[in-house]
Length: 291
Image 1 (cartoon, rainbow, N blue to C red):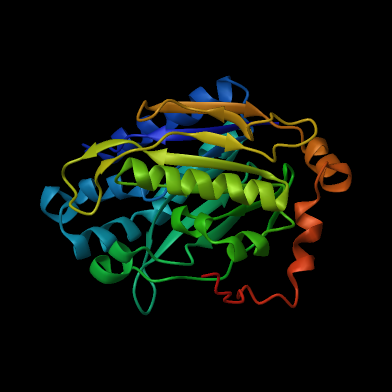
Image 2: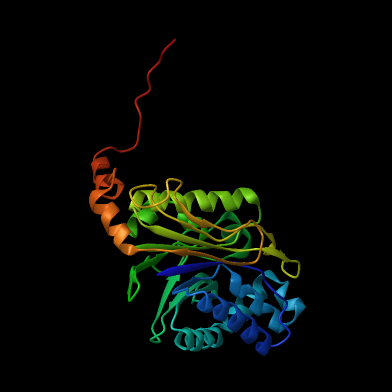
């Protein structure tokens, strides 16, 4: 299959038709390149807040609910595009209102009209201390025609136990938005580490460029990237493809899941199987004085 990961700029939308045209263009471009799985970034849906006006889009609290109110319509558009082009789409995540506080929710939409939702597990300091976004439902493994797919939203990719919960996935998608190059590299390093540990493929997408209308987003730095275990049949670098920093567009890579199965069974190392060897080792070290 071919995976496409987005370096996606946010726009001030003039109308719903503007959003339809934009998303249709992005999905159509990836489909023409032969992509089967399209991965949009974390909080890419926040541009929907601009449909409620600049004042709402720039307000921390109001923007959360303005986007949440648009998600059903956004899902319907993704359903149509997934069916039209025969592709699976990890839709850009956005806030979803709950009885408590909004969660940060991504959706996996199939060409057959199925949808799986994945909420972010662990909030960044900004999300929890200033924005009031909370962790949502549990991690899930989605069994699809393309293979088993999981989603770790941005910061979640930096935690190995969350990655371990998705050990049965062939592909882990990592939608992200980062406001500094250090943040981009944290998520990229986390994505590569999860590919190493689980002997799978990870696909990272990013928001790129300015969103001056939103104090929550500001400037974003990143790129698309598709990573793998640096083992038999895969690149020695663990990088299948990496886009240019802050250049909008798709990054593509061909992925053969038979290679994933082979590395898991016959790799030079067997990280996924040997994880269990840590059982009983609590991670503490003995303090030894040498002086």
